[in-house]
Length: 227
Length: 252
Image 1: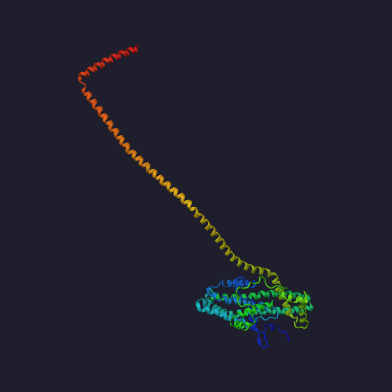
Image 2: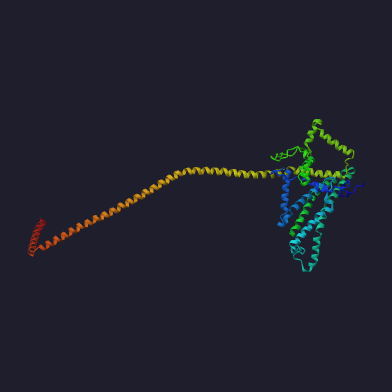
């Protein structure tokens, strides 16, 4: 069986049963339910503190209508971060490398922001299509460009997430293979490559968190425009 | 650590919805702990002890009677070597990736672990401190209220002295007023009596004067001209005698 670098991105099945449902639902187990006690253990305290701070930060630019989205956005952020961080472990599968999953997140949420904007304040929503202060000559052209940029947002959201993660994982695999193959031949180079791998892993950890945050932040921005 | 995951997720799954309810009913025969939640059992202060970060201490305690101190380490080494030699675990590029991510995780935990733990503890302590502060403030304010009440009671006792002083004051005022009025009455009476005395004196003097005037008038009337001439001549003669006498005295 030839080792294909893209095998890690295949949706895992076992005896014909797709395991992606498990991959999507099991990370939930890592977060303890908030107990009814007044003082909790460290994990629960930190989890509660983090969720509070994150929600507060995220809801700063939104007005009251956008606050209805708080649960959705916070839970999405935590879900994406957990999935990515778990995906950095060896022999694991990251569901967010599947374009279908990311588009499944991006398109409905983006569409919801657009529809909310068009329903509640159609003039303002349509007004976003034309930035202020454009010369009169450029108006028709600019409207087409802005419409196109609006329509491409869900694609950008989904593909950004997929591409970043896939690229990161592939890089890790490639450099790890290089170090592994070089180890018997040129140990010094192998050590150098191992250092690169270490730094890359640090980067991947950061990228994982940042990408999730960017996803949620952009949704917040779209929401802010349209509420 | 993973065993703890299972233990933690068990109740979490049990509590979730209808699926949880069926599970609870089906496994009720297996329950060994009491079902009621009150009184709530206290939480352990610290988490379970682990060695090298992931192996629970219970494993070591379990193996100690049979294999001594090095037992679990031998077990671990043996398992690892078995898996490597039988190629159950193949070393490939993923091993390097695993080593790399393992290094990152260990570095992160070693460096940020204590500070994160102390931060979580600080959050809890702040919560307790806030509640404690409320309680302390309530206790101090109530103690202060007790002190104030005692002082008020002492003041109420002292009020009797205040009443006595006021009573004395009022009696003095009354006395002064009475004496003033008495003085006024005596002076008025004296004025009236003085007036009567002055009136009587006036009467007597007027009578005297009147009488003297009448006597003089009558006497002057009674003086005849003859008598007048005689008296004047007599006076002149007396005067001459006197003058001679005086002259004589003067020259002598």
